[in-house]
Length: 218
Ligand code: 5RP
Image: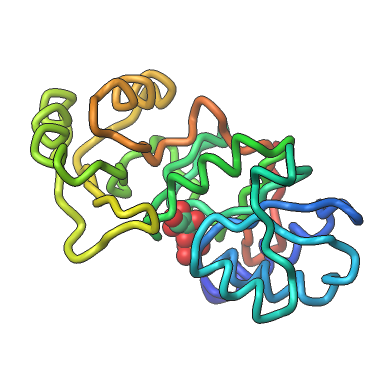
C-alpha cells in the first residue's frame, strides 16, 4: 500500500462520522483532498461546509458543496483534517500546509475533531516534524529569539504568506515532552498568531490508514 492509498483509506473512513443535515468543518492538505473527493458522493446529504483554507474552499466549490461562513453556522458537528504528526494522546502538529490558524479556529468550533492520516504520522514524541508558527510579519525576528530561548531553531518558511497575510516560522530541534505546556508558552509570545500544536484541543478520533486497514484511535 502506498502512502497515498493509506491517506485515501483514512479519508474514506471519516465519511461515517458525517452527520446528515449538518454543516461540517473541512481542513486542508492532501489527505483532506481525498476526503473532499469522497464528500462528493454524499453532497446532497449536507447543507454545506466551513473551510479552513482558500485551497479547500476551491475544491469544495468545484464539487458543488456550498462553503459557509463560520460566523453564520454556529457550532459544527464535526471537523475533519489531517496532521503532520500525532501522538497516542491525539495531540497533533499541524500547519505543514500553512493553514493552521483557520484550522485551529474550525477545530475549536466543532464538537468532534476527526483526524485522518497515514500511519507514518503516528509518533512517540512530537517534534521531529518542524513545528509551524504563524507570526505577524513585524514580529518575525523577535519571535525567533524567544523560540531560541525555548530550545528551538527557528526558520522562516521561504516565500510563504498565509491566507491571513502572515509569515510562517518552522521550529526544528524540539522534543515536545509536554505539548500542552509548550503550546501555552508559545501562545504567550507577542506576535504569535497561532502555534501548530493542537494539544489543548487534541483530536477526538484518529483514523490511520495502514496496510491492514484503517486503525481507529479514540
Ligand atoms: C495543513 C495541515 C495538514 O493537515 C497537514 O500538513 C497534513 O497534510 P497532508 O494531509 O498533505 O499530509 O496541517 O496546514
